[in-house]
Structures are given as structure tokens and as C-alpha cells.
Image (cartoon, rainbow, N blue to C red; front, top):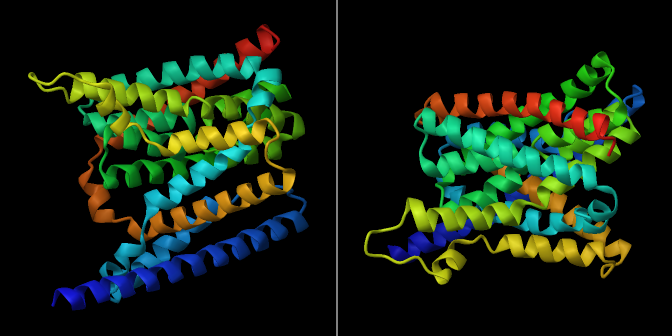
Length: 355
């Protein structure tokens, strides 16, 4: 009986992985086709970023699998966290540390102010509404730093539940896409200069892809500033993960007779963050050729496509409903605070101070 179960699980893993790989190919084709359609109508940047396409397709297939009673059989292949971590490590090739150091003084200043302020505001609001410590940490990291990337790093540091990661990731995706489309139009309506608009996008929108998208819709100058600001925030992922691991070991989960040790903190620290930092350092200082950097970026996009499709596959409306209204209010409130503060800080740093 156990042998039969193991065989069935192995078969489910193979079939599920083939399904996810096929979906990634379809997502790439859809992304290319939609981009071409918008381009033919004079819109250079596809406003429907591939993460949204991937999640939507995942939700569609999710419904089909559940209706056909085959969802649980393919569950072993739905390795959302693994795909995300692979994508995040490879994404290090996009983080040019030398560009941040040479051009990003304003971006670094804004990133430090924004990350600190938004993180603690989200933490405070989550505490007021009695959201549990793990979910609160994942939410605060996602809103204040860089969305899914920070959420995964924080989840590893605080040992968050899988459903909490899925919940926050879904909120990030479905919030970032509307902001990517709306913010460039709002910036134009307000008459914001390109550098202030770009800093606003980079400081507020949670996913790197959507930040670049918003900057592209507004213009090249805005895109350049938005990218530097967002890269500056991305660079703080490792710091945030370490501090969260330290805090949870020393304060949240400390037992009266237990003395926190460096080994416990090291055990909690998400190791993939080190891979992200290593790849970014190697790429930033020219130790990878342009061809290798390009290949790493492409592989990262494929890994993310598989991850976001898996998120759609795993989403359960019933489970998300059990989370209640409190986390939704916290995330919404934190996003509004982030939006307003990012505009103010961008105006001061890139306008009044002239960085």
C-alpha cells in the first residue's frame, strides 16, 4: 500500500511539473502576444505584466483541477516557494550595486527612509488590529521593501505558514498591477517632473517588474530613477531578513530557560538571500559576461512564471477567507500610507534637495 502511494505521489509530481512547465511556455507566448498587441496600438509597454497572466492562468487551471478531483494528486509539484527562491537568487543579476553606489545617493536615502517608516507603520497597524506576529512580519516586509521578494525572505526568517506567504503574495500582485497602470497617469495629471515621478514609482510599487513598467509608461527618465530607487530597496532584503530572524529568536519565540545563540539565528536566516547577494555582486563587478547576465535574467523570469502560476494553482478562496478582514485592512492601510509618504519623500529628496 505504501509502495502504491509512493508511486502515485511520484507520478503526480511528474505530471504536475510537466503541467507547470507547459504553463510557463504558454505564459511566455501570451505575454509576447499581448505585448505585440499593445505595441501595435502605440503602447510601448505591456500594462498586463506576466505575473498577473500567470496567476490568472493558475486560477483557471486550479478550478479545472478541483472540479475534476485531480488537484490533490498534482499537489507535490506545486513548489511555489522553491520556484520563487530560484527566481530570487537569479534576480540578483538585475541588481547593479555599482549603479546604486555611483548614481543612487538619492535612491539610497529614500529607500532607508521609506523602508523604515513603512515597515514600522505596518507593524504598528498590524499590532493594533491583532494580526499574528508571522503574518505581520511578512506583510511589513512586503509593503516596505519589494513585495514578493521581501515576503519570501521574511517568511523564512520568521517561519511563516505557507498560506500566509500565498496570501501576501496574492495581495502584492493584485495591488502592484493597478498601481503600475494608474500611477504614471496620476503623475502626469499632477505635472510631476520625471525624476520625482520615477522616485514615487520606485518607492511605492511593490514589485520590480511593475516599477519598471510604470517608469516605462511615463518615460525613460522616470524609468531610470524608478529602477535605481527600487534596486536600493531590494538591496535591503538581506538586512531585513537578518534583523527579523534576530528579533524572533530573541524576543518573540524565546523561552524562559533558553539562551539565544548565533547558531539558532543562522538556522533561521533564509540562505537563498546569500545566493541573491552573491549573484548581484558577481554581476555588478563584471565577473559575468553580458550573455550570462542576460541568460540569468531570462531564467529568473521563467522561474517566476512557474512560481506565480503555482500561486494561482494553490490559492484557496476558503483558506484565504479564514484569514479574516484584519490582514486585508492592514495591507490596504499600509499601501495607502506608502503611496502618500513615497510621494512626499520623492518630492523632498529629488525635488527640494536636488539629488
